Length: 130
Image (tube, rainbow, N blue to C red; front, side, top):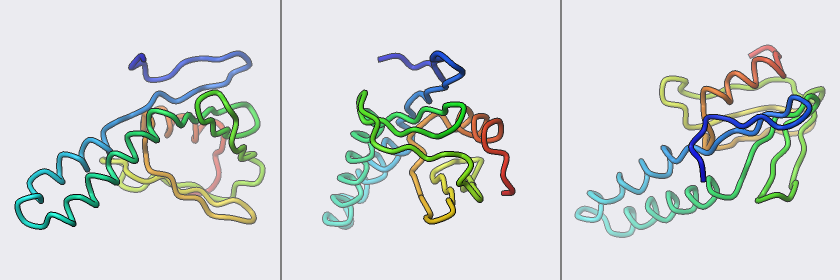
């Protein structure tokens, strides 16, 4: 597995590299909590490990017309930009949550991808009002 910030695919498709920052912070934050509250620390650590697994398996690909979500090499969902109304990355200094609203639904994703490349791709491909 490489740690490149992005990889170029044919036809101007950009695949975001994974970022393990958020899962690692959660797992390491759970360690001192073990001394205080075992069950709270366990829940936080399990959630961090779940996010780590998601970062290992989920990929976002920005194509010319849509944001595609892949699990391994299987397309699981496509979000056409023309249906987007708004998007935002919460806490840009320490990005942890990505939100976007489509015509019929709202989506929240943890930032498990290169946040700078995510911001760049969103600004280039979906310049909606933020």
